[in-house]
Length: 282
Image (tube, rainbow, N blue to C red; front, side, top):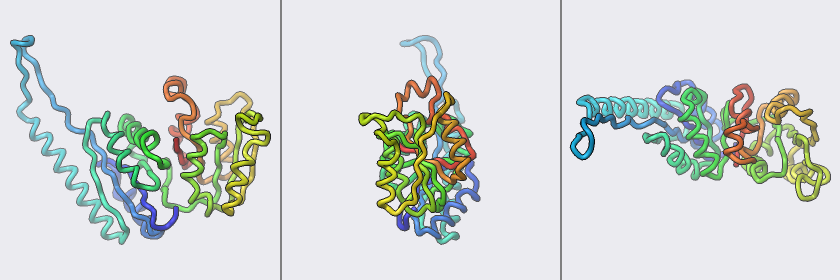
């Protein structure tokens, strides 16, 4: 990360102080502004219908307002605690909240991501699959920035593996990762089952992006790799591990989202794994 950038950390009320403190310390050291976006699902409005319209009626349980107030109090206490933590750390940062129906959270996350440089979703948010999916969707499909999973987006990376296939998504990911790539000791470009035509991956796949990164001062190696019929996401994971990568850079949902949602896909494989930091962009 470059100094004076803004990093978005997506959290929920159960994200530990340690996670926030680690990001705050990294932000202080790198002179990065840290935005902590606290997500939460709105308390649903329960109702019960009696009879049938137009003669039936609906009533709200007596304790509904108390439930809403309890949720609000928990949220306000968490915001105050995070603000205090940021102040003690000496980091530049602020806390914002999003409390909405899950279907609308992706929109709210996207709005905040559009004025940040990189986004990160706290590991514990994965436990709420719908919340995690909405947050990731908001960043990837409705904002121009990259999303980092399984690692602090503010830390410097020394050995980066780029999964390259000349697609728009892969190009977006490399552009989003450029601050990391320019400070890395080594960058490996991995092209899996490349199609060596001028219309697709070129006659010498990976050399075009390697030349561009070399102009930025990156130390680049290009590998053209066969998948051997294995799933590409697993190939990326294994090759990145073999290369000792501390960050994987790749395009997200280069194919149809519907197709990937049904059949899995490279993006899903790399988003579900938790042992390698990955930077995704669409």
